Image (cartoon, rainbow, N blue to C red; front, side, top):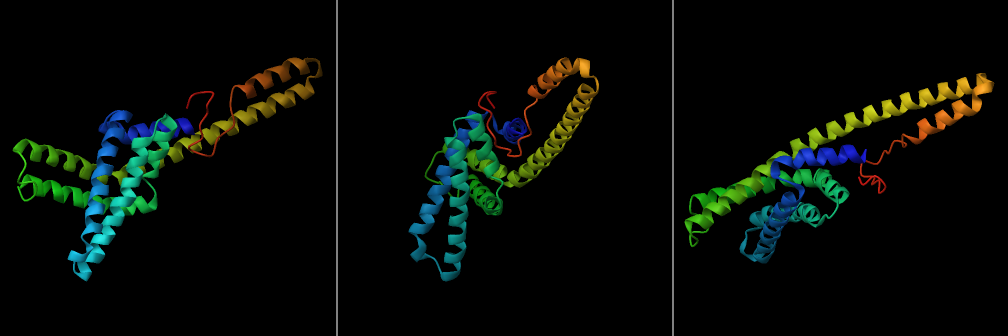
Length: 215
């Protein structure tokens, strides 16, 4: 199942670039969101009670999503990258992603309209708009990406389990034949052992790392 998980993590992020590009983007977005959270916490005394509650909720969402993005950025192996990508699908992060998307797209609109960053150059504002729009659209799409990846993982799991059932049935039939045909016992048993050795047992943990096979 580790191979299926790795494949789905790649599919879920392939339009964002190669894994190293995804890591870099995740790092940049984590810095942005941590900065937003820090700014909110540093200005709590300036908010009305109602604004304070809303902004505290937003700051918490920023930190929840930023921690997941930082884990992606810090991943150094295929398995680590896969685990970090799927960790963005936890219920806590799923609920935090929509408000983050709204924040980023609102900031993009502010830069585009000159309401934010008016002191910067037009090129700097354009770059900020592009970055925030990309981040926001990515956040919008994550829940659907998670649903698709999880559905594909479930299908891969069913296919692998069925293959294991078929494999075990073939082994059982071979063993029965070996018991009946006494004269050929040694030969058949050797063939059965070779067949069993070619197929590892099913791993129920999607994030299992097979160090021998490199995935």
